[in-house]
Structures are given as C-alpha cells and as structure tokens.
Amino acid sequence: QKEVEQNSGPLSVPEGAIASLNCTYSDRGSQSFFWYRQYSGKSPELIMFIYSNGDKEDGRFTAQLNKASQYVSLLIRDSQPSDSATYLCAVRPAAGNKLTFGGGTRVLVKP
Amino acid sequence: NAGVTQTPKFQVLKTGQSMTLQCAQDMNHNSMYWYRQDPGMGLRLIYYSASEGTTDKGEVPNGYNVSRLNKREFSLRLESAAPSQTSVYFCASSSGQQETQYFGPGTRLLVL
Image 1 (tube, rainbow over the protein chains, first blue to last red):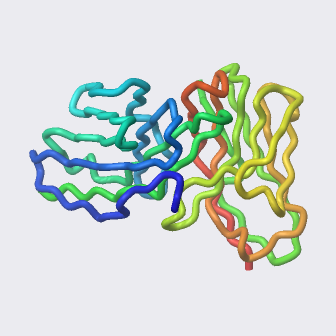
Image 2: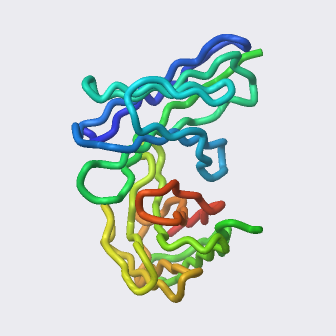
C-alpha cells in the first residue's frame, strides 16, 4: 500500500462545475497536509495546507481533512480552464519531517 | 527575488558520465531538498539538508550524492549516470523542516 494515494484521473469537469479531488494516507499520526498544483512541464506550486480536522477555504479552493478516516480532499469551485493541471497531495508523517507525495490527479476543465 | 533556481534546465548524458545539478535559493531558508519526478510516481525525495552542514538520505538516494555548499546552495551529483536516472529533478527549500516547501523550475535529465 502506498503511503499517499490519489486517483490518477483524468478528472474531467465542465467549466463552472465543482472539481472534487481525494487523497488517502496510511500514517494515522500524520500532522500536516498540503495541496500542490503542477501545470504540465512546470514545477509544483502550493495551493493550500491544512493541519486541523474540518474545512479550510481560500478563494475558490476548499481543503477538507478527516483524520479519523485518513483522507484529505480538495474542492475547486467554479472550475476554470486555467485550473487544468495535475494536483499533488503531500503529507508530513508523524515521524520525521519529510513530505510524502501522492502520484497526483490530473484535472481537465472543459469549456 | 528569484526564489529557487536550478541549472541546467536540460541535460543529455551518456551512460557512465557524471554531472552535478545546481540549486540555489535566495529566501534565507534553512532546509533544502532534492526530488525526482517520474510519470505516475509523484515526487520522490532523494536527499535533503535540514540545515547548513547537514545532509540526510531520502527515499531513493542510491546513485546520488549531495553537497550543502552553504546556506544558499545545495547540489546533486550523479557519479555514473544510468538510464534509470532519466527523470525530472526538482530542488525545493523551506524555512524549516515543518514549513512549506517551495520548488525550483526543475532539470530534465535524459540518460542514453
């Protein structure tokens, strides 16, 4: 079992709809959770981080964390073609300070 | 403010050749990291440096060496390149190990 798992996609959503991305992790003691966006041929850039159970909103993005169920999700509201990218989930395990990345979910927003 | 810079952007090597990938950051960050990214594999940590003067192995360190030259610079060396090291290499930095990591633009390496 991978430490951090994501559906590779592609997740195809119409413009204006909500894109919902999920990420599960195996280390129950993980403390910090990050979502990065990566355009094709570019480097990852941080969208959001979340440490506590519940929702965290930033503009059109909402991160949701459920530590009991060991998943973190990212919602993209009013999806735009410019949101088409690969979204990487990263988790900092309880032991150590290194980030573990999932394989990423490719999102395609169709006009 | 350039953030994290990497050189070169692209490189083609023959099997057995050596090379050094350079990384520098101007954000006064303490921690620096080297990752490789392969299709479907996500980012995998090769080596990291928690602070100037220290380096530690990550998930996939075999075939690589690193040097934390000073607080700004962290280099990755391939002593004898192999086709399995064909990948995109990203350098990242953070103010501390618990903090957000910021990535450089990447180096695309092809080993023939």
